[in-house]
Image 1 (cartoon, rainbow, N blue to C red):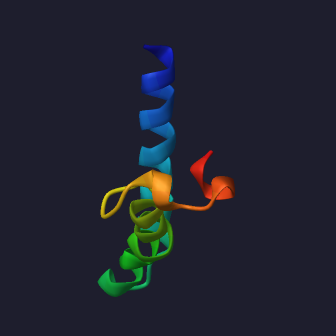
Image 2 (image 1 turned 180 degrees about the vertical axis):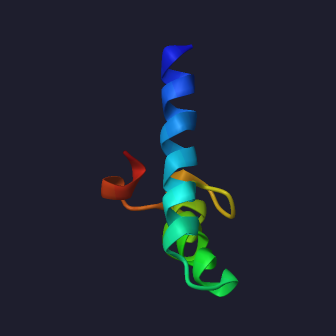
Length: 58
């Protein structure tokens, strides 16, 4: 339970820091563009993880 609370707190703080330093609303989208999009493709959402090279499967 402590790990869940700590993880939620860290990600909340990262979102807060992103919002504080954003000059306008369009600057906030930098996190999904450069972090979440690669994680989506490498996480097996659109295709099986088994199709990735062995280095990326781990």
